[in-house]
Amino acid sequence: MFKKRDELKNDQATFSIESADVKKSSTDTNPADKDGNTILGQNISIEGSIRGEENIIIEGSMKGDIKLEKHDFIVSSKGRFEGDIRAQNVNISGLVMGSVKTKGKVELTKEADFIGDIRAKNFLMEEGAYFKGSIELDREPNRRELLIQKAIPIQAQPSPKDPSHKPD
Image 1: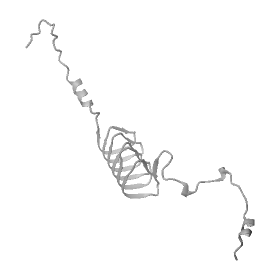
Image 2 (image 1 turned 90 degrees about the vertical axis):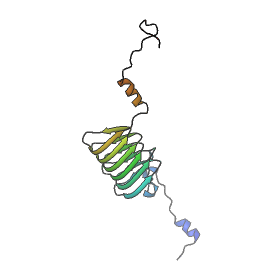
Image 3 (image 1 turned 90 degrees about the horizontal axis):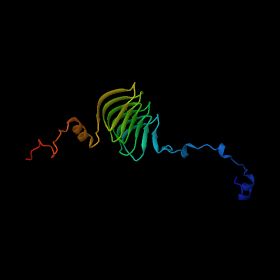
Image 4 (image 1 turned 60 degrees about the vertical axis):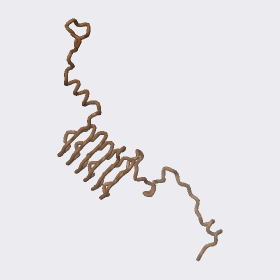
């Protein structure tokens, strides 16, 4: 029933595999692509919160909150998201219902359907995108002061050498 160790050695076949013939198995793949993006596939549905230190791409559906303060969040054209998003930049091509707060840019592509509120430094919406909600753009800290200075003309002050100038 069992073969001896010497008999096993004689029965083993010798072969070689060229690297072009080798395919990665599903256990060799990483959920993060080469650019450091985590992709939630079309057949994935998540309910809950995600916090992380890398970019996330939603191709499936998610209900919950996203906190990626220093990273980007992307909803692909087939993706669906409901909840609050906090990320560096947000790109929406699918359906999003909720609020978005970024320190960078929010971009709605022509395939996007967005219902909710956006607060960002920059906002871009392609023709054909659907948007229902509000947008608040953050100003640069000194921009308001510069706008006020430009709006109020500086009155010409007489020079001390001007004969019509009388000291107080």
